[in-house]
Amino acid sequence: MVGKQTGRIARGIALGALSSLSLLAPAAVHADELYVPDAEVRCPSKSVLGDHHTSRKQPLVLPKDWTYIASSSMNWIAVMTQMQAVHCVETAWFEVADNYQRFDNRFLGFSWRGYEAGGYILIDSVGTGQSMDIGTKPSFSPDKTFFAVVQFSEAGWGGFEGFAVWRIYPGGITPMRVETTIPNLADWRIDRWEGEDCLHLSAIPHDRITDWNDLSQYRRDSYVAAPAGGWALTPGDICPTS
Image (tube, rainbow, N blue to C red):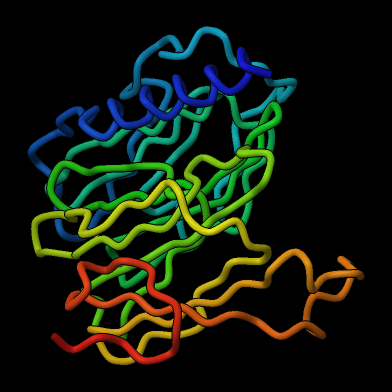
């Protein structure tokens, strides 16, 4: 188990390094034609992570609304960024990918599952591109000033485990809070944003659960997070204002 956990950590570190793996695309791109980067040509010929465990025999199949700006090979997804650069995301250890989405013509995201692991890749296409594993689908604030995730699994299988909030800027994103140790509760979720400065979350204590097939029947404990409290998870349903 230690070896498998170490492997997941190594994959996470390698993915972080990939956030700067952007190769310049041709400078001449006419307004009336779409340039789709060729992952086979524009991304490295070999996987960065040589110890991957995948039985997949074909490249990941991208949805139609991605094929205008991205392509895939066995080991990579290549994305055209807003600066006409090619950003490469390694997919060598992914067995399955789904839930492909695009957010406001800037962010792209998808879920993945692999060898005793899984997560959610978020790609920021601004500038020369950036990508990271945030564990699960992000929740954006109403005005898209922030996004947040919460992910907790007892097995620690996720690409990211914990709670985090990022600030969105025109030129990139910056973490405001990253907590990798959160209360040991079940079914953590983000319930809603209250404006740009208050995030409501909830989860269920394990001792309330007798039927794991229907968690909707159990009372949830409420938590909030706000910039006034440094975005720390705080029990309750009222966000601090000072």
